[in-house]
Image (cartoon, rainbow, N blue to C red; front, top):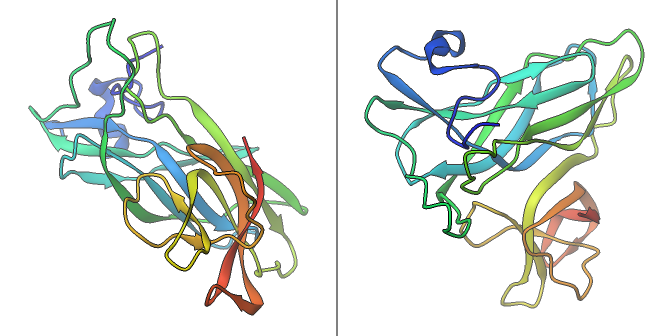
Length: 229
């Protein structure tokens, strides 16, 4: 397997940069998705907005690209940054060094999928590269399933937005429990309507966002937690 900074599957080698629209004098630095939001149901062939939150390696100011591949069973995102030649990823530590995060800042963007085909109501998996740690030369960027999306022939139910990824819970100044996606180091986050006493730290969280009839902690759009890996 490859080091974490080598090209993702959309570019099998740096010599094939043109396949992903990169210029010959640029370097590709793959990154990962920490958090994803997408509609629970969509109409067949309709464009789909997907929120992607992830890491930007070493704090470099680079151009982000978020290509998505679609096959018969899944949508897979493998985002990467383009940098001028000579601007590379963080150096790999000595083999005896502990695994450390290379993420200095995060990105928050919306990727648009042109639409998903279906001859009948069905589901696709939503996947993305989801590792955010420096790896030894034998490791690479794994692709993880964040959830599924339902494709409907009839009008879809638009009441829920699915959300999944690495996040943590915290209590704000008013004592409300909120969920904060990793890589977004700022106040805010979503109010969690079914929080328990356990703190979720760096876990794979899955749930959905929806509009409550009655506000919770002053907000009507809240997060309903379904599972934590």
